[in-house]
Image (cartoon, rainbow, N blue to C red; front, side, top):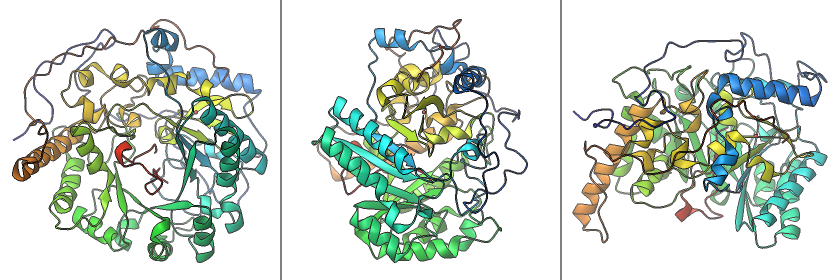
Length: 524
């Protein structure tokens, strides 16, 4: 039986007092990490719970946020010295994907939603919709960044909440504003756009408006049957599947607008049934997402010595891999294969590609990838706004800088692992543990290792069978791994995080395949 972790003695790193895999934790809750018992409604028809109120002057709020980061996540907020990292040769990478939170409320109340039902409840203080003035300012800042870095392409994602709560005539306004600003400031930069929706509000009118603006549509769904979607309900507890299915059938008749489907894995559902049922909606691609979880809030079914998520995914992989016809792309499997072959990718969930996503909230605040909201209150916050900060300033924020460091951002166990170039330590939010931060192996470490090794073996067999030209993929073995040769990032372990004056989801298409026809997808 293949072991869940690589053999050999992992090499400790100076910054890692415990380079061994983290033990299964006992979940703990605190006022900052536990969601409220009753998060309340979050549809436009209801007023904001705290209208017009904010926790004191902005500078006080910024200091409070720094202290929260330092308490919950010492790595990177008190242990990463960004200036020293720059001096050691770690150059910042420009932002290439901009997630515009055009709406902060949703018509559904999915029970597992990271925006509304997890640790961060910041949505309560956000305006329901992004104003024209905020859209204009966002367009200016994005164009400024594209011009400063001579970017060949940027990707926009309209997100929420539910972005389709906007009227059809207003849906394309943010994209058109960005395109106009970029055309003036950086005419060689191409702008692609996607909207991520729950699909329940898709109509012919909305699809026509989106198609006319060249905005493709990604839909979040938990499977192609009502039984798969029992957690996707409206605020009265009524199932949302029928409306989503109608929207998907309509979208399938417009393949030029169809970006794909995102599906969060549910261990209670049969993997083959889930996969086959999604194919009924003719998706050009399927994103299979591990539930947002971490060491302080482990995923369902998490047990030492078990790999339930790998088991689920490998059942789908075997069906997909051995199917005589490729009926859809499955991004997770394609990304692993690309990384095994040494090809570049732009995903942030695997591999060592630097993070390059920024989120703009409805009030104009600049945040990091909002999947971080699953960790603790304010985990995605930067204290920056469009009015006061540029995206270049975001690049030196410790939270984003840490996600651009590659191996040097990883735990010692991860740096010593032979799969590190493929796994990359796993999705950043999955590494979190309260009071320690984001420098542990993924809570899905054993699952990822089993999944990657199985896919590597399948690719190896295929290469041998077909006598593919070029070097074969290396066999997955239990050979001990050589220690990392990278110079560790300099840390200021005793220095408090500097006061900041300057916040899913990331591009998921392999760079070799990225085109206007294959935009990235971010979980809704």
